[in-house]
Amino acid sequence: MMSHESSQASMQRTASSNDCIREDLFSPAGGSQGSDAGERARMLTTSDRLIKGNERLKNAHSVTLEMEGMAASILNDLSKQRETLMRSKSTLSYATQQLDVSRRVVQAMARRAATNKAVLYLIIALIGGVLLLTAWSQTNVAARR
Image (tube, rainbow, N blue to C red; front, side, top):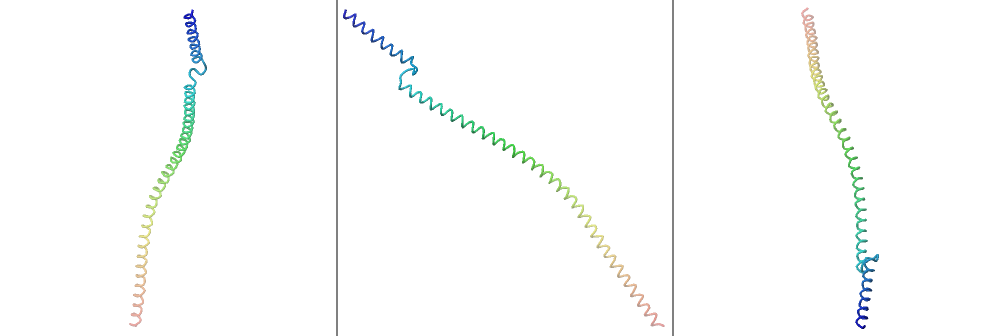
């Protein structure tokens, strides 16, 4: 009977041990408390890092979109300024051509004015010479009489 009691006690201990193991496995904690708390802490830390990483990515994305908008605006402004500069270059080129034509016309006018001035001085000299010649001839004619 003793062996039967000892075997029954041994079976009860095994059953209670199995019940404890079963409770640990099927409990919400899912196993030993110490390693579960550490695992939960690691999961929470990892989850927090993922959330912060996502926030940083969202911020970086919004900054990138903002910078892209600013870059597009700058490129648009630069394009307009380029068109303005090209029009200005065209206008200045036309003005330079017209100034060259005007300079040639003014030079031609200056040559004509110099020529006309020389002709005028020549005519004045001829008239003066004719006047002197007539005055001399009249004095000679009056002296001969």
